[in-house]
Length: 433
Image (cartoon, rainbow, N blue to C red; front, top):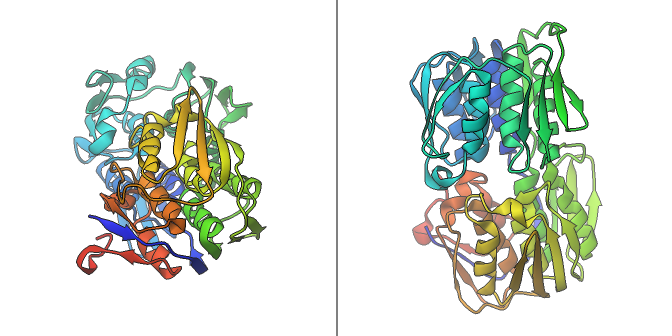
């Protein structure tokens, strides 16, 4: 599907989308906690739908409507010999150790770019926990067979914290005692905080966090779990970041549903907007952003690599050279995002230099279109970055494969329209099904 974005100003109030990071973790916890869980404000992105499908195939029963998801579970008891995590990196990295709690052989697969993302971690670690594994040379599909037996292990945390998230949940569900998961060079620490917070809310056994270098499960029994768990999914700072940047570039917007107390890493977008010179007001459950004169800024995105696309959209509309650190984190996303951002923003007269772990964005204070045809590369965040950046362009642009936003933010284009953006869809086609 192709979408055309015309230069526009944005004004109004909008509700941020549901956090898929929070939603997927809640689905996993609801599977692992025996009894009923009620998840309020559920998400329905492609990644969220994949998580709901996975927990059903691993034994949970679900009822879903627009306002809540009810999960009944007796723990991991697979009803099918295969799970498919769609195109979700968190999904496959979190649910693989969880599926390994079963003694049944399970085939784990996905689709799209996920099939090319490295999963060597599991080849190395799962056998140390008594799990048989057969991968496709360190990639999907994988066959595993447990049951996983918690033991003290040491892992590399530099590629992604998502592997750790799955192990923490699996260890807890297996009633780990007097064992540690030792972690070297852990990245994206705020996402581990989110995992531990979700585990606590669901009444799971939560390990002691020893300065993010080790997570120790003691021998004490778990306090009694509630008969019904009630959990409300947070608003999404990752998707909300694009709305906030849109306001900083092109208008005056209040975004509701973003909690300043959230553990989500991407709330650091506020720091970037402030450093760039946007007018920012932070409230308890909403953020107000107003366009102002924008200047280049410096930002470390090592712990929040998903912010690179909205940061580049912002930097392209600033005057001067913006420096963003953490570039190495981008290679194994839905696309090689550093390279993809460089390629697409060159079409917008914005030069990007890729230097080891640092990206330099040469902002022109606006967008000057050289090539009207942009490509999402089937990457949801690239599609959103281009759309937002071009609000301040001198001509319309067309985004190809624009439906990529369904992965995380199905209502993205409708929300832009609600804020006053001229978004042209082919034949009045809906953006998501």
